[in-house]
Length: 311
Image (cartoon, rainbow, N blue to C red):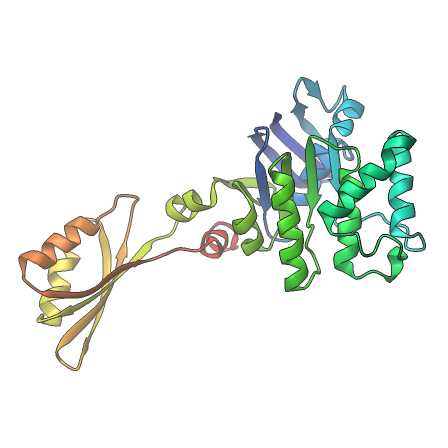
C-alpha cells in the first residue's frame, strides 16, 4: 500500500534522513523506533506530505507524493507529537469543527462523533474545554481528529509522549483496536509500547534503517550473542569447562562451583544455529546430572541498544 524508496532529507548540510526504503502493506501496524534525533519525525512528515523530500519518493497506492500530495493526504490521518488543538473550545465543538473541515455532511456528523467518542474513550469529556483535559485526554481528542475522515492510513508521531503508565496503556489499546481495520504507522522510543502493539518494527539511527522485522525476529536474529545457563551436579568444574568450550558454536564459558557439589555455567553462543542439542549431548555423554538448562531471552531493549549505541 505504501512504497518508500531512497527517501532523503537535508536541513542545509545536515542529513536527517539518509536514503531509506521500505514498504508497508495494507492492515499492518508498523512502529518506527529510534533515539531522539534519529529522523523519525522527519520521515513521518515526508510520508504525510508536510515536508518535501530532498530526494527519493513516497507512493501510496498509485499516487506519488510529489504529484498527488492532496490525494495522499485525503487517505491519511496524521497526529503530530504536539496535537494541534484549540484549548478554549469544548471537545465536542472542536471535533464538530474538524468534521465540517473534513466535509462530513451535517446529517452524518453526530453519528461520526459518537463513533469516535466511543472508540477513543471521550464520551465523558465531550462537553469539557480541551484546555482543562489531562494530557491523555488531549491525545485522545487529537486521535479522534486524525480519525475523523475515516482514513485508510493513520500516522502517529510519539502518540504516548509525556503520558503516565496508565494513559500509555489506554492509548495503546486504542491503537490496537484501530490497527484491526487500518494501516497504522507510529513513531516511538518507548520499546515496551512497540513490542506490545506492532506487527513490525523499523529501527532508524542517524537517518538510516538499521533493522526491519517483526519483534520476535529482531530479538532472535539481530546482532549480539546469546547466553545459555546450565547447572550441573556430579561434575568437576575444570573438566566441564574444557568439554563445553570445545563444542562448536560456544564462544566462551564462565563457571563457578557451588559448595563443591554443583557447577553453574554461563555459555556465550554465537551465530544463529541452535547449538543446544550439541551441548546437551556432550553433557549426556559424561553422565553429569543436568539440573538447569535455559537460554536467556534477549529483549527488544537489548537489540535497540546494540543497533543505536554510539560505540
